[in-house]
Image (cartoon, rainbow, N blue to C red):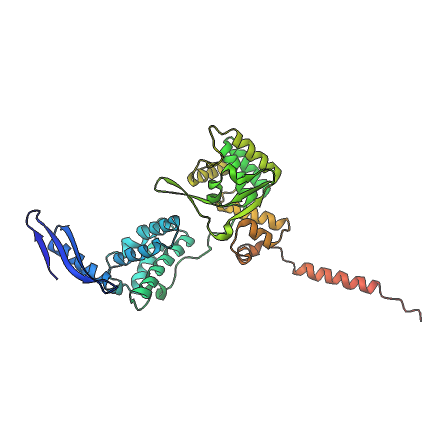
Length: 364
């Protein structure tokens, strides 16, 4: 496969014909290589990709994988995926031909992450491993890779290792007292705790989303920040679009907060902050109040726990949280529902006693 030298510039270039996946003959030219070896390596790698070869490097496979994902995933999901791949997967596998990556290779990579001084959480390790496996599954489906080495060698980490935590109303009140010196923090955390909305849903809210007469808020969009740019996106799932009823005190709190904002338009974001701000304020409030530290998402769990304790049905809780189906609610919070088996036995016992006591007396 010929490559050529540009005598004027002193660099090398590759120029060749290839047949694409639709059978069309095309010409490819790329300049600027410092050495003949680099130019030949580019040509070989390009042809491997074009012919869907298992000889392509893992780095080239990732390029194809990300191209495929681009039209299928939301920008935030794509960015998170890219972050994990670039940081934890590509540095190890990038230059390896995919057909040379064995279960042993993957196992060594896993062991490096597990023994890292950074002490990654079990959930994070599971996420990273699943991403690697997804890339190999893509190669099996579209590029003739015979097997998935990540699946063969076994997983690492645990899916739900980060235990769910939540605050009681008393704990939340201690926390909110510690952050109420900042109105934005107070109102934002009050909404998160008393509605169970996601942080991205909170940060996308405008005043127009509130109907104070009906005492409701409409959840219909999601906020994200990518590459120093604020984005308003579609909700996480179709069921995420919902209308949530609010207690009167929360309506009053939001109205009072909005009335004090300077030069504010009702269609602008009500909370002009980022998730980083919320995390910072969460840390500050926990340290100042002395309550146990939980994640911002755990405020959503706290709301669900509160509703369960108050006796509301799983269906109502599912609708309020915007879960895709009631099974999600039950799977997530089943351990919080009280065990009713002893209550069943007690009520049956009482019913039996009642029947015995009301049994007609035999006068003979």
